[in-house]
Structure formats: structure tokens, C-alpha cells
Image (cartoon, rainbow, N blue to C red; front, top):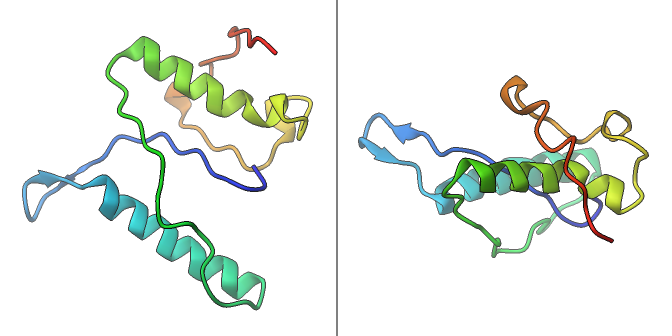
Length: 107
């Protein structure tokens, strides 16, 4: 998406501390690394991302399937591509490749 990013992931366990990586730690790492990369590519400097993020905890597989479908269909609903294969900024693991293809979205 031109003005935001959707991510769906399962936090891993920090083996050194034997605890789940926090959302704040994960987002700080993603935003930090991507900000540096974007600024290098655009010969820019400064803030790229807003500080806050809007996170949701998914508690069921049905809800997860709906969230994945929403993310995968978002560029199509916004008119950025005619199908998923045309949109170059989607990456999904093999496990979820078929999720959401039969979901119908109301306009």
C-alpha cells in the first residue's frame, strides 16, 4: 500500500530470555531497518514511520484466515492491481497461499 503496511506474524521466543519477543521490540526492529533502507534508497533522512502501530491479537484460525484474506485483497480493493500476482509487494508463506481466495468482500 502506498501509505501503510499490513503485517501478520507469529512472535518467536527469545531463546536468551526464554520469553516471547514483544510487539514493541518487533516493530522497532522492522521500522528501524526499513527506515534506514528507505532513506538510503531515496537519498533521504529523517522519520519514515509513525511511532504508533495499530495491532490486533488474533485468537482463532477462522479470524486469522479473515485477517490474511483482508491483507491479501487490500491492494485489489484499492485498485492497485487486478489480481494478487500483479501486486509486487505481497509476500506470504506457502502455508497461507490459498487463504482468502474464496472470500467475498462487500463494497
